[in-house]
Image 1 (tube, rainbow, N blue to C red):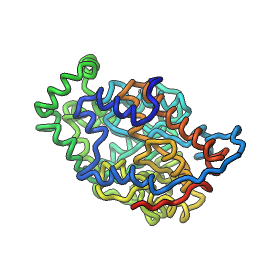
Image 2 (cartoon, one colour):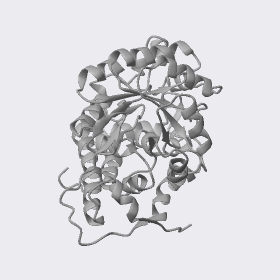
Image 3 (cartoon, rainbow, N blue to C red):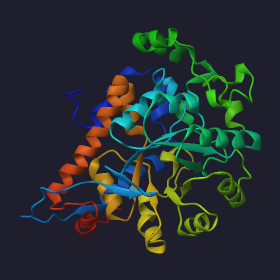
Image 4 (cartoon, rainbow, N blue to C red):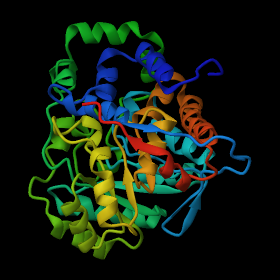
Length: 380
């Protein structure tokens, strides 16, 4: 890890270590992957004009969110099926976040129970929630998260219909059954295979009270689980969850000023501008493109953002445009795949170090000062 300098290098290591079917789950977008590419391209539309001869010896990256002071503006985003990367992945990510005093967001579709993650880490935990067709599942997850001490509820709203991740689908001849060439490829990744021979295939552990054992497999059971996504989810569901959840509630999947206003009216404490990392709707706008408009409309309200962040400068650009904090998903997963928990810690440190270094080079002592250094550079 001492030789790994960037998230891109962690990504390359992860690709080598993972079987193709697992890599394509982690990395792929939907359909033609225009959204996936747009999320990265949009950062080139902005550039910095630094200040020189400024004393930056007192620079710091702290933010205030929901009444708490955080040492960096980074939050580990919710990601599902992480157990396909390494056994115990969810707890490893939570521990990695805790070492950096960053909040960690656990997915409803995690491969470890929310209680076991809460018991295994001493850090700030948030819970991500899908509004499922069976309200009993949703209500149980909310109650369990509240009891286990999760501090915030992040309601994902842009997955009401299962998406078409075509690259990923090509890996299987049937649900849970790899195509022959992918089965051979998995067998040739001996270290990955050995880890999974010592542990059972990851399951949707949080949902064990509602599905038979054969439908809980992270591969074979995925169609049954994702079939529970609720196509008729509306703002009334957010209002109902607001009444049930006693703590900060965030609406994730907002991409317009109008929906940001609706989230606030429904009782949310913040939003996450997100297109699900390019994994739901192709040809969707990048969250960064609407950030300044949303912040102008709701200047005193926390606005978080995700999708496409790979560099500290990406994070600084979002903060300069008005984001309160940035959620990172794939970056720590690359580290996890490359070197387990140690790799995930390294990924988070890379991003924090890049943010701190760029602040110094910009002649800024705080994140707020970076906004004065950002200029728009339309390139498309």
